[in-house]
Image (tube, rainbow, N blue to C red; front, side, top):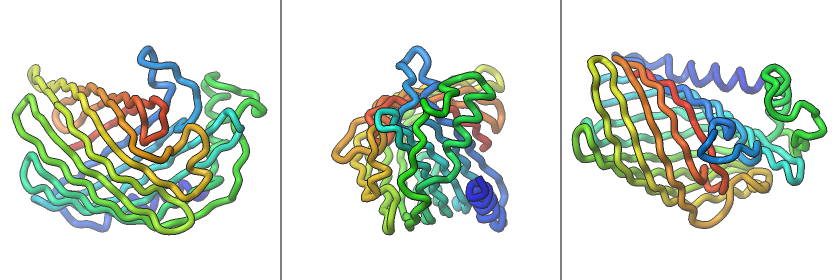
Length: 266
């Protein structure tokens, strides 16, 4: 658990040393338990995500950092792996509809406390298996590290109803990490009622993922080859704050459905 605290603190430090005008933040909680009536949560594959991105923006430029903590479990073979990605980011906003973001940083995979977190969460909330013999518990390695660099670009067209497209990719070099290339397109629609903004989105993504670390390719985790993911979402916001929900049919090539709740400050 000590590793997680160090990584999150480092992310906040990277973002905080930048002097700028506006703080922006995304905090993400992802879990297949959020799928609800859209699909059956099986607690397999990408079991839980915790993400935090902070950046400080001045005009068309923003500097910051992000961290993703992902629990990966495979109940069929009772194995698991934790993945943490830490990035420093730089973002250029070309206009209101176009942006380019570069990211780079370390990745760590292995036993990072995911089993402890999951088992105690199940006991606290009385959800999921509470018998440790029924939870995937086997880590094959303590931890492995790699470096990762990536780029994401987005462009859109329209107003309250907006078409958009994105390209995203990253390359991992080292003993672990995730490399991928993805293109996505979709529609976003928003409607204001006084200070309240309501929104929906629909998106179709095509991506190809590669992992050389066998622990990231256990059943329910990253799969090779081209993959299609269908995504739908809703959001509600007021002033600079928003809450969004997204449902993915094939989260990052896993073949598993996954849902995310995001808290945003803009």
